Figure 1 (cartoon, rainbow, N blue to C red):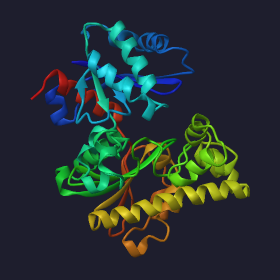
Figure 2 (cartoon, helix red, strand yellow; figure 1 turned 90 degrees about the horizontal axis):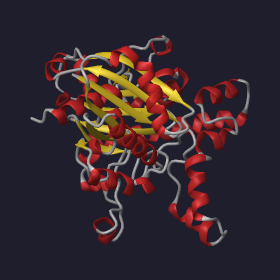
Figure 3 (cartoon, helix red, strand yellow; figure 1 turned 90 degrees about the vertical axis):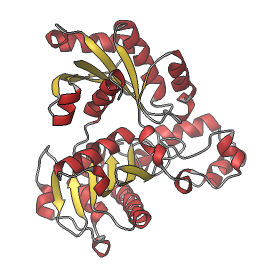
Figure 4 (cartoon, rainbow, N blue to C red; figure 1 turned 30 degrees about the horizontal axis):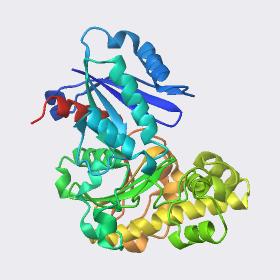
Length: 376
């Protein structure tokens, strides 16, 4: 059965076409028929046409049975759902909390439903994996009506990636995910850490929005709420402009003054740029603090796993994060860490293993979509 996966960015569209079935999922033999990226998107409808054109012959024959969409903010949706008007409305209503993501996802959903009216369309939410957070992890220390009436809570994000990596780690070790405690670092332009205990998310660094937590490409991560209120009330900062600054002009870009791309920042740091060096140290330090916290939250871990563009490809960042964690049972192997590979691999043979596992978000979206076509 053919499943099309569509993952919308702010100005790009990633796509992948899979041949899969319940039997293929059970034996891990799903087939990737084609994939690609459309950049500098003017409209999602045009981007979708480009994707169809690029996929060409592999779209022929058997019709696409389902289309799966990555949606960053799904609120309280506990899992993937077939998209109808009510689901579209819910995604739209959450756009203010994920302004860099949900509007674009909604645009590609509408274009996809128009282009493939006979397929089943499924929303796969980044937030769903974190619905297992216990109250002490998701609740802010605010009056209860903020939680019940205004839905002010920690939702968490990158859940598709964290779930994918946890499942892949278990598969590589030939055991069920329920047997492991993992700390997963998804590091890219957006970054988050997740404590995965027995296959379930029990703590994660992002919160009410994808802004909370780590230093990211253009996002600030944690900032004292009073500091922001001070800027608005005492300094006359426009709230919308400040929100834009925190999401689009902070993080690595702001600290380094060079770029939001870690590759550029590392190059500048190696050339002696002190601001770039500070950006790398700050990025690694913030991640290290969360790792320590999650070791405490789970009373240990079986492995620390890196994924995402930076996590998978930046040996210096992995080394920087793991430096001086040996007393906590984490040590990276310099030789293994420097080895270039696109495969899942162990890069630290310490008490707590250190792994690099490429995320397979697209495949997991395809499998979730098939699951909605054939519910158990």
